[in-house]
Image 1 (cartoon, rainbow, N blue to C red):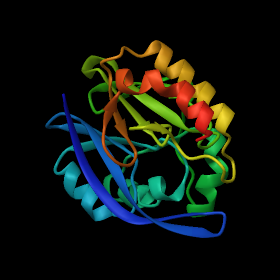
Image 2: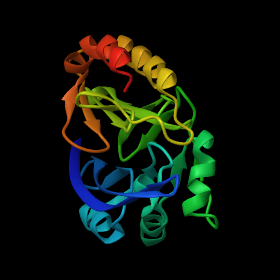
Image 3: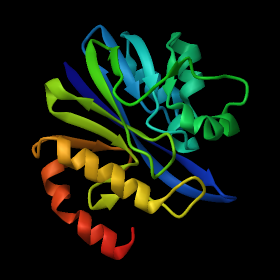
Image 4: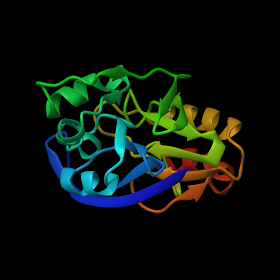
Length: 207
C-alpha cells in the first residue's frame, strides 16, 4: 500500500465569488491499482500521477467545484466510476449537469478500491454531503475540507453550518486514534491528537 500526493491549482467559486486555491489530491493503492481522492483543476496532472495503474474509482470528499471540476475528465480518460455523497448532488450539478456520479456514498460504507478499504464517515457542515475516508490499515484519514491543521473547514457560505461541522468533528475526533494522520483537502497534514484538544477553542472563536 502506498499513498501518493500531488497538488493542483485553480479557482473555487461559490455564492458569486471566486478564490484562487491550491488543492491536495491523494492517490491510494499499489503498483497496479489506485483510487483517487478528489479530482480538482488539472486532469492531465492527475492522470499522470496515476501512471499506468488501473484507476478503480474517483472519490469526492464533497461537491464544491474545486474538488470535482476535473473528475469527469479523469473518469473519461480512465473509465473509472465517480463516488459522491448524494446530499452534495446540487453542488455537483452546477459543475457537471450532464454527468451524474455512479456511486452514492453513505455513512458506514466501506469502499473496496485500489486494493484498499476506505471507510466512509459522513461529516456534514462544510457542505451537506461532506465525507471523510478512513484507511485503518495505514492509520490515515482523508478529511477533505472537514478538518484542517488548526481547525474545521470554512462555514458561512451556502449549504454550510458551523454547529453541524463541530458536531461532525466531535464524533470524528472521539472515535479516531490520536496518532491517526489527517490528510486534508488543502494545506499541510496533521494528526487527530494534535487537533482534538482544540475543539472548544474553535467553538469560542466561531470558525
